[in-house]
Image (cartoon, rainbow, N blue to C red):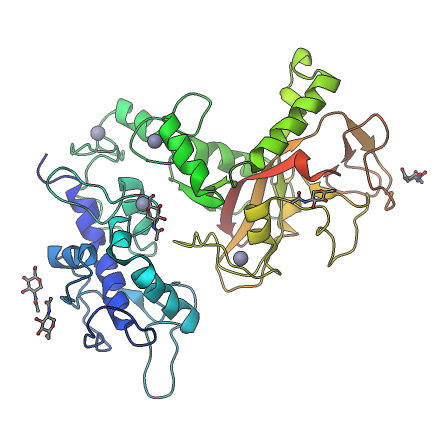
Length: 434
Ligand SMILES: *[C@@H]1O[C@H](CO)[C@@H](O)[C@H](O)[C@H]1NC(C)=O
Ligand SMILES: *[C@@H]1O[C@H](CO)[C@@H](O)[C@H](O)[C@H]1NC(C)=O
Ligand SMILES: *[C@@H]1O[C@H](CO)[C@@H](O)[C@H](O)[C@H]1NC(C)=O
Ligand SMILES: *[C@@H]1O[C@H](CO)[C@@H](O)[C@H](O)[C@H]1NC(C)=O
Ligand SMILES: *[C@@H]1O[C@H](CO)[C@@H](O)[C@H](O)[C@H]1NC(C)=O
Ligand SMILES: [Zn+2]
Ligand SMILES: [Zn+2]
Ligand SMILES: [Zn+2]
Ligand SMILES: [Zn+2]
């Protein structure tokens, strides 16, 4: 068990050296604690260093050993914090960051709570670094190590050779034409707990244990990345594909999926509402889910880069509806403020058609991905309507929601609810620009 997860991680260690190099470079703008270090000279070393020194440095921010292998040519002209916006050039020199906001993010991580932060995964910053008994790795899991890989890198050569099975802790070589050494390990990787990414999840839960459930809930509001290849990724991406119905446009690829963790208590109101609707409508007895709960799409405005690679921090801009919804769920009192109310009045609008919700997904940020939310909605007894009624403020008497069906004035279906406890965001899905 000595050299565990070796290749996947070392191939990535250059990333962490970039990060640690950065943290040091950041000493300038903020009163950061570490002794000042020569900022990484605008390095054009083409090495994508895989030295263990770099990962050592990442784990030991107290040292100033920046084996400058990191500020590599692969990081190109993009800010090394957000990887999205171009680096700032002041006329004489190109800085490592796009602006002060990204620069301060790095230094605040640094200053945040001293060394304790360095115990967290270099990619998700959420889980402790993996320790195999002999050494501490840069990442919490193989899933994060995989995720941290530069995407555009050609994977023709050494990246695939010499890798180990993708299951946690397994050092066997992957079986030919698979990422895993065996069917059992493939199944394990497909069903990992979304919190620890180490143990298999329980049936009907995203987590392996009460400890992980509690951990994940305490972190709320937050988003937890679902590994590519996970059964949950497949289920959400499949729904996205199956419900892309716009003729003449091909369904874009789903690139990232995050499980949304609500703040503790936020789910309780939803569950209470669902139970009340179920008690009234007896949907389970009709072979449906409690409260006739369904998964529906919602597209909205994104101002920040939430959901892009490595971006799991919410912004605080009130114009960023995406962050607002994920943080606080939907609020009917805010909804429609900018656009005016919809065709079926003052409600929260979702659709079973991903390509319809895509029309409402707007980036007010630079990104090559678009964001969409998959939500749990208590449909209850839906009132089918073909004609608009913009004066509605509640579902018609005897109903829990409005189902605007295809036909009439509508090309695609809409589901409208009028109570903010009848819906909760469940997954954030990032996909290519159609
Ligand atoms: C940095 O650390 C590595 C490994 O600990 C060591 O081999 C190297 O000599 C160090 N470099 C400097 C400049 O201290
Ligand atoms: C940091 O760098 C300075 C200058 O190169 C050196 O004198 C000092 O010993 C280094 N400190 C550590 C902890 O490596
Ligand atoms: C590091 O992980 C711990 C435990 O999961 C968490 O409480 C803490 O907020 C994390 N630190 C950062 C900076 O995210
Ligand atoms: C939910 O709806 C009620 C009434 O419709 C409103 O007062 C409340 O502020 C809303 N928002 C949240 C986050 O609960
Ligand atoms: C629209 O809804 C309102 C409120 O429920 C109702 O009073 C009105 O009759 C409806 N209008 C039409 C045209 O159905
Ligand atoms: Zn991680
Ligand atoms: Zn294996
Ligand atoms: Zn777990
Ligand atoms: Zn935001």
